Structures are given as C-alpha cells and as structure tokens.
Amino acid sequence: FVRDPRERVLSAYLDKVVNDEEARFVHAACCSKDPEKSCSKEAKKSFESFLRLLHDKCCCNSHWAPQSQRMNWNVWKFINFIGHFENIAADTKNLLQGLSPEAWTLYGESGWGDDGDQPIFGKATGARHATGASDRV
Image: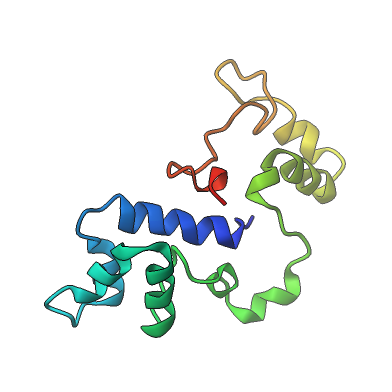
C-alpha cells in the first residue's frame, strides 16, 4: 500500500518541522554536520524551504523519500497489486478477493472492530495521519 506522495511529504514537513520547535529530526537527518543548525532553521521558514533543503542536501529519509526506494529492485517483478491508503477499505477487499475467492470471506469480511462484526477497515480506521495533511493537499 502506498500513500499519495504530496500528502506524505507535507505530512513529514508538518510533523518533523512545524510541530517540532527546533526541527531536531530534520537536523539529525539532513544537517548533522551543521553545528549552528542553520540548515534546520532554513527548513522551518516555509514548506518551499523544506523542499529545497531535501533537494539541495540530497537528504533522504524514509518519511519523505520515494516509496519505490523502500523495496529492493529485484522484487518489483513480483508486484502485481498496489493498494492506496486513500482507498484502503476497497483496495484491501480487492487484494483479498484477488488472492483467493474465500480470502475476503475468511479474513476481511468480518472479525474486525470493537465487537468483531465489522469488515477490515469498515469503519473510520484512524488511518488518516495525525498531521491532517490529507485535508491540506
């Protein structure tokens, strides 16, 4: 399952820069050789400044690096399904039904939720990230 890249990088900015007064995570990930912390201070100026930092410093981190880099290239030939977090309930159902006719019935259709009577991701799942980035893209 993948997340919209724009939402993902905005979420990283909101969480790791805006919500952290000193942008410590960004400093550690991108600017560790900058004792004056001018690099992370620059990232705090604006979202555009943050993006410029990621580009100019070639700052890669799992929070904002392309999701395609999270998998070894030799396994890509085995990928035949990509689900999207924005459609997690429907995509999960499609995935399970594609695995076998009974997979959805056995593992997805019920057994979830507080009372065990809901389908997987049948209710609001909390899958929305805590930063609310999806509402800001």
